[in-house]
Image 1 (cartoon, rainbow, N blue to C red):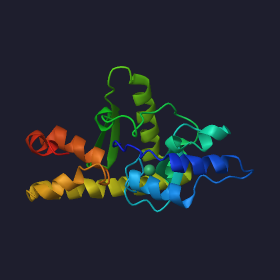
Image 2 (image 1 turned 120 degrees about the vertical axis):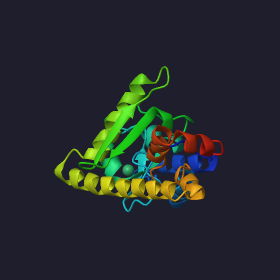
Image 3 (image 1 turned 90 degrees about the vertical axis):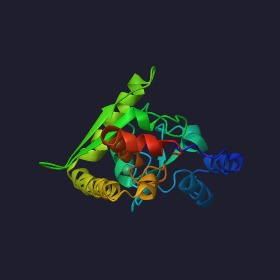
Image 4 (image 1 turned 30 degrees about the vertical axis):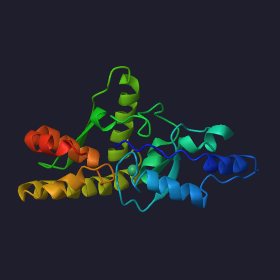
Length: 214
Ligand SMILES: [Zn+2]
């Protein structure tokens, strides 16, 4: 999970307020989508897939029928269908990647390649964020494992994608291709949080060298 501050857009909030007054208002308006995709760099804020085929405008705090929350610009996040469907209205409150600049440090993701591909998610909460961090880790574990037969299949594909990215990172490190490694840990890169943890844990010197401009 990476920090994606949302652009302040009172004009979009005005548009959303107009929609909120309609009987069947729409919060997925084209200008809303355009700004959300820019702010989140086309990445699902939960799984960090930067090329999701199923795209959804997600309510960070579940609206549960509350019109103000449903049409609140600050509450609209970019996610993939898999993570949105997994999250539903459970798990909240969560780490807020639009507010918390140190969000990635609090969620460690490890890929184990052998004997079989396994993902581990661990909490490293900053003081006072223990519960939200724990909730976030629980949700991410469920996103990576799947909770229903269909979601399990989707999660399997997601894990394969993450493994491919992990292998790409290892290749770039082996080739001493530091510009490529640097690109892979930028906020907008797919699975950047996972890559940052791999570097911190396994290549601390390289991380020290690269982390300054990140
Ligand atoms: Zn996702």
